[in-house]
Amino acid sequence: RDDLTWSEGQNLASFLGQQLRNLHLLPNPPVTPPELLDVHEELKIPPEWKVFVDALCQKKKDVTSRLENWGNPIPRALMNKIDEYIPDEFFINLPHVFKDTDVGNEIKPCTWIHSDVMDDNIHMGPYADGDGQHNSWRPSHILDFSDLSIGDPFYDLIPIYLDVFGGDTELFKKLLESYGIPLIRSKNGTVDSTRKKVLSPSYRTM
Image 1 (tube, helix red, strand yellow):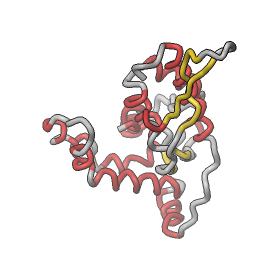
Image 2 (image 1 turned 30 degrees about the vertical axis):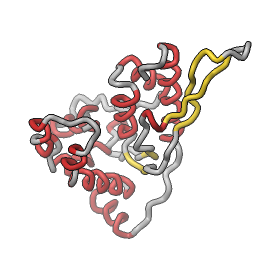
Image 3 (image 1 turned 60 degrees about the horizontal axis):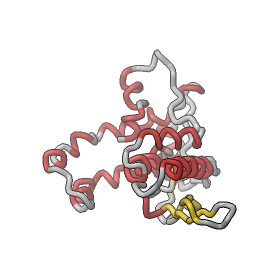
Image 4 (image 1 turned 45 degrees about the horizontal axis):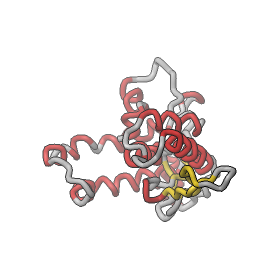
């Protein structure tokens, strides 16, 4: 990203927004194991969401060791607060996130998610103008779908914002313009405080 011009960065953001939109709009495969269908009956959430929640719970179990092995060291003061920052009740409240308040209590569908859209998984190629001179770089493919799964589309936006864009809000806004699918749709002012908290973008991102 640091080596791209402003125009190249804008093209990259638009490209990623379009590619994520295409991925997130693909139909999900049927999830039919009996134990997952039981979850659907008990909690009234689609069984595919149970797959996503189970994956998040598994990641939470070893989150401290994974962060310790991450590329850049994280201050010990922050490491000591990991469990406090990601409390167990987060997973209890997750079904609230799945409710789509635009349509009553209907559950929002989960989507296909790439799970690893980072610098190393975006192929950039040289772009030549009419006279054949290479004068810019353009994205052409998203690579490595080995972590392809189903879940909350927010999951794909986090690594892009932090790793690919380096926290650049203008590039992220450009991506969202190109993406074009509402991620937060609830405007119901009568939502209870717990529901309001878990519907917020920051809570879903956490």
